[in-house]
Length: 359
Image (cartoon, rainbow, N blue to C red):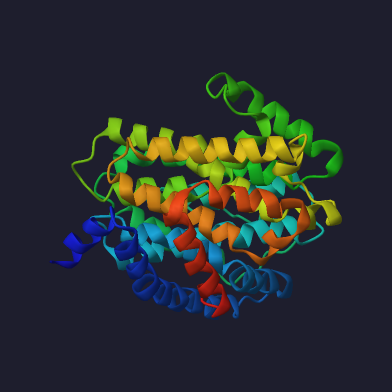
């Protein structure tokens, strides 16, 4: 069996896909992150350097999780991995810049996040991302990340089919990051005004669930990987985008907020899961996102691959030590027990990977 054939087989077989992910992809992610860490160490401005290094050290698991799409059938794994790590590193670095320093400037945040859309457009000229930000001298770090993504996008065969969809996803991600890091007194209203007009198209979800779904980069990674097949149609791409947004993307970020719920409450941080009225509603809505995600996966190309991604999200997040906290422990157990032996096996695997500090 050829490598490509093996990976296609892996799309419908959890053990093969997960084995390839752990043995082939995770070591490559580590190497790629080490390359960007070296670049970050050369950032002249101390505050920017600290945030760049912190984003790589503390959020490596974002790159690790997203890199599953380097095993999507038909992709060039090395090139796809380079793109995923670069794009996710942009996301994590900018998240630190708008969250960890004293800046609360909407114009500055929006300007920084032009990097998220320009990275997906190989024809785009790079903006002055730090134009309104008080710290500017990054030695070309952010621009280098953006250009790495642009180079990859220029080689994606069906790029024209995905451009509109990935730009929609990236622009909404940028709006989320711009608004949710503003002062407490204004951020909720800003987000409400932005999201409310979109809910006519998404009547099954709340404003805060829509916001959560916009925070995921998985849709961009999936569409970019799928577009490596030059024969894929625009209608297939739209179907894939609609499967990922809001359900799979929403599940991703709701789980992320779910495990941080207690910590965020203690530090008075915005948490979308905290908008649920009680634990029963929280459990039921997470289950709904999970059920709908799995249902959507069955209608996409390589459904086994997408199913594995969804089950992997559940296993990855619910293996976090924070899920032992009283407030969310029973819901974590319910989500795991209701989704079959496959999820439980992946969960045990994630626990083992965490024990060995691989993830």
